[in-house]
Length: 127
Image 1 (cartoon, rainbow, N blue to C red):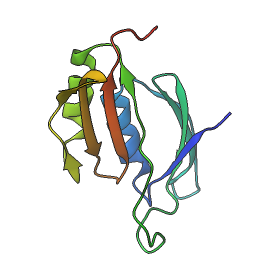
Image 2: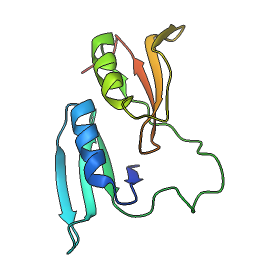
Image 3: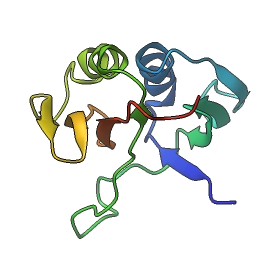
């Protein structure tokens, strides 16, 4: 099993709210520090377990560009567009949704936390 773990540098609660809203999900578990920060939290996004916390972040640690992207795959264009509209608020980058040879709709968003999402529709996706 391979699990994604996001580090939000003190903004984990804010990220949880955004992702719950954008992906129509709820946090499964949250453990807090004595000061109320997020020590460890988990949620499922489109069936995949995601772990997150308030530690680290990218400032001062990373000296290279990121080369990873999360790719949520939706069954319909409407689902993708609903998620895209929520993620693009305050995003560093958001490409306009477009059709490509391998999908009827894709969009690329680097959200306000620096997480890169490659949204994609696969109308043949088994749910």
